[in-house]
Length: 343
Length: 255
Image 1 (cartoon, rainbow over the protein chains, first blue to last red):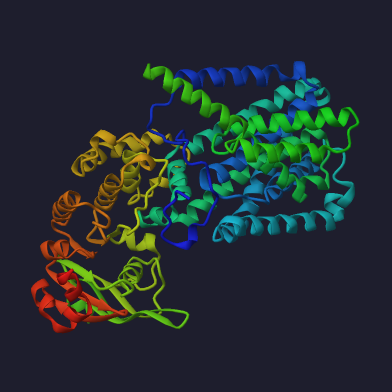
Image 2: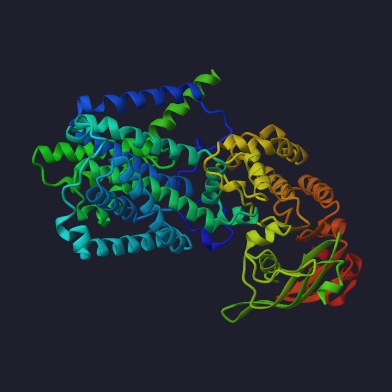
């Protein structure tokens, strides 16, 4: 509604336009930022003491996955509905490398991540020419192709049975290889590194161009930016981080199920990112934490209608808090602080 | 032929654009001389903006050719044409509403390099454009607003920012689509002054409905009607042309 669009090519998502936190030169409220970062780190480090460690690992993986999606959705205005291709594609590749070569799990995960980026090149190249809902549909279609391959190629992927007995090799350190509590701490640095990379990408000259493309693609073009190439690069980077998350998820669970490349996984990560608040990065962490804990709670109390509950929460958030949980919080916090400095 | 006439900044031959059988631009031969300020005028729907979109690569050419300093640029992508030294502004104000004027101009300055791909660098590296960006912001009179998001700027300020963006590209040819659209008298005179200053040593093609603007800026005027060239000449020649008077200027003069 407030976007001046000079050609129909930019029909895109209607982002809440009155928050301006993306602005890069407005002085970052650095005090608050460091405090948040410290609090986030403490939570990340303390998590397996309070939550069953495999669930803590799930939260960490899904959080990075949601952040990877947010790079495209929040900063580039591209809704990928096929990110399971990269999460799941990497999960299979990581699992296969770990099973067949017995390398330490970080190496296997790295291989999975590279594989995700590799398949993201052609998929991104063919998808970014479409915008809005068409982009979502094209990415979904490619993800379904990956699903089809994973389902059919039984000799390699195990088909419906999934890929079993994926080891957590870690330089022979038995505690990490057998106890999920210690595995969490071995895997956490990779998650944090991935999150740092996302932050770096968003706050780089490249990230600035992405925001410009999101706000007004024809204008960015007129300034000499090759919009499609920028989108492809963003797509591949996002896929890499999704792959990092998916690979760690596979190692953590010790097997890869067909579920990881299913479209419901693509939907779930979109749900998390939007629920938490897009264009914030932190939103992905909050959304992932919320959904994983909620699902675990309901599953362990024997409740069957998980989808009904998460769906209802989603509808409520989208209707009442369009910025998502984190976005709404940050917005009100920012307003209070602004009012405070004016007095 | 174009190569032997290097004094032409832009040249189109038989340029046509068809939208599903409708000829928006029809066999336009346009010669824009280097260093001149060239106005395109004509009633609404005459094809001015379509012609602009063809010249800047935003629309594909149906027939004919476009040459920039003797080099064929027909069919090139908008960003390629921008890199060859053609900057355009937009009729409808077209900005990045989450970015500040300073960030806009830094982006425009960076647009002529390949540094935008550096996703591993801090965005603080954009600060090397800061000095030049400050100058341009100052020049268009936005210094006091340099750190506000563009979404909150007033209309005239947005138009001024557009001019800063165009100038930041340091283009050889400027295409200005209605630089004074929707402005009050005071802003119009300021903008005329601004265009004159930015056009130093450059070639300008602009569209405007305001005859005061056309009269005070343009060296040459091309009048379009129904997608075709109706007349061409100096402002005084064109305004005396009978076909033009009946088609367009007459109404404006008596209004």
